[in-house]
Image (cartoon, rainbow, N blue to C red):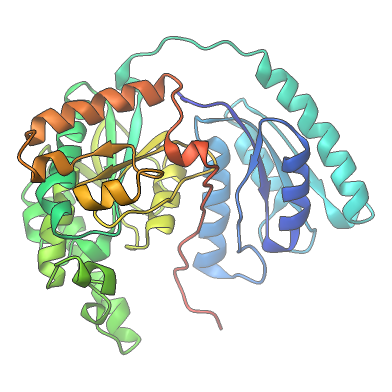
Length: 373
């Protein structure tokens, strides 16, 4: 069940990006995602890019899709369209090399997109139960207030949604390091616990194989300036955003949950790439905690910003939706701010624009699994 009804213009590779953007700009209600991949990728990276593009089209917030290809990229334009169409949504495609170049392709694409937009405009909203909602939870630009205020408050929201039979996904494997054993204790069974430990070990092994230590970049310079001293300290604050409920399973990047409840997704710590993975996994809304502030949004889903630092909230009111700094100031409890966030979430589900939506923030980035040859 979606909470938005976008017409998504997807380009199969970066080579078709300008044509896709031109089509989206000419059709009211259309959005596009700035995909920088799809050309000359091989193996796991090619498979992952294809999966993410397909799953973005399958996201419940997307009502219809148009796929734009150059014609010689690795990502199969027609196949992406066919996979999206299996959901029952209208999906079509155009290929630049088959349509005599940019101008003809834009003209054909606009005509197809306009027809889809007209059909979407006739669809009526329907009432759904909160159990149909899947959210993704992210943290970025963290400081000392993140683990003390905003993350626990959002964890409260996650617990409440799970108790109401909804679905919550949290991620950022690099920011579990030093706290993975705590998460493993909450796993549904030993198999899931072992998966949690494994994704952290694999993350560290990958860094070591390139001759680097993740601790050299974590905490980030901004985290350190905000008062975080070690990767373990950052991780202990990070995991609070996932609440306290049982972890049902660990999802690969961009995979969809098989049921209801709380899930971990194996993603990097980079905010945009992590959010992209969870949206490909079916999240219809993102709750994003931040201590230092960030404007990040998405083309297909509202992103609610929660800030635990009262000074950052005042400085970045244009971008922050909920002030969790009231916890730090001693004016509200974690549960009171949790209820405030939950209420804001319901308003957004029912149509209220987040600040990122209003400002047309549409960041997008796919995780690269292997190095470029």
